[in-house]
Image 1 (cartoon, helix red, strand yellow):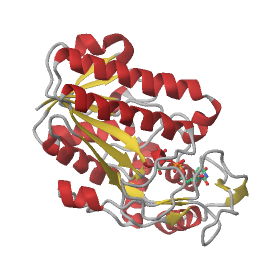
Image 2: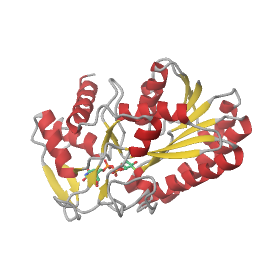
Image 3: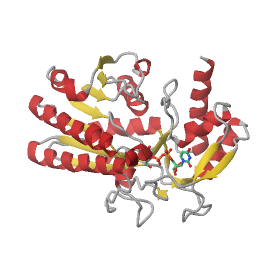
Length: 320
Ligand code: UFG
């Protein structure tokens, strides 16, 4: 298929672009480089630097079989202090994309949705039928887009799949996570191991969990990319399907830090800090639906392996 990958210079987008190329697809990456890196765009992809709001019509006019829409603002903390960035940058931009796809007859969409659409769960693991009550603006913006996609699929025959990611981590060979301003737990802890940061702050030790720190479900970025390939294959005209992607096992912030200590062999000092606004206590996925309907089988579920891949990537960047 000929596929447009928005946000294909970012962490998750570039790994997916690489995986699509490895699987024989033709890939065009569209990215404004606001947070991505031109050198993360994989060899074999054509790169268009631009803003979706400005160029999406022109780009889609050349004809595509589908769009994988990764471009987004995706920081929970930031979304609580600068909500406009999320309503404008995520919701309005995605509506522009949907309209351009309709205008140019682009038949398929795979959308990066998120576990943050659920908010604080009533039941764990979280299935796709769980209530959606986001606790932060980031999750609310992604949920609004999911709703828009549902109605565009029903009204205009779009074949759409939303994948609700839990906590994506690890690296795909030489492609990994490197944000100019890092806020995610594993890369921050690894920066402490490298001596780039003195200590890791643990955001709250008074959560209703076993050790008092937040629990998350970490998924390897390569397993995540494999789900996108399957989603593309299974997308059906007029339907919007939603799948959770996680491993079904929760790890607390303290457990993640301990795993990083084990993998890196560094002491990694940690300090307790106040809770971060917008954080739910526990997010763990049930990915039964993805396994049954898409045939998805995560092959890199072990947290130690995920951290090891992230660590190898981080160290190789340090040496480069
Ligand atoms: N955390 C710390 N200290 C830090 C950074 C994070 O204690 O310095 C904690 C957070 O409070 C949270 C956990 O580590 O409890 C994970 O935080 P991340 O920022 O790494 O990830 P989030 O869970 O906030 O969010 C990520 C993605 C979202 C996605 C969500 C789904 O950024 O896009 O996972 O679980 F929606």
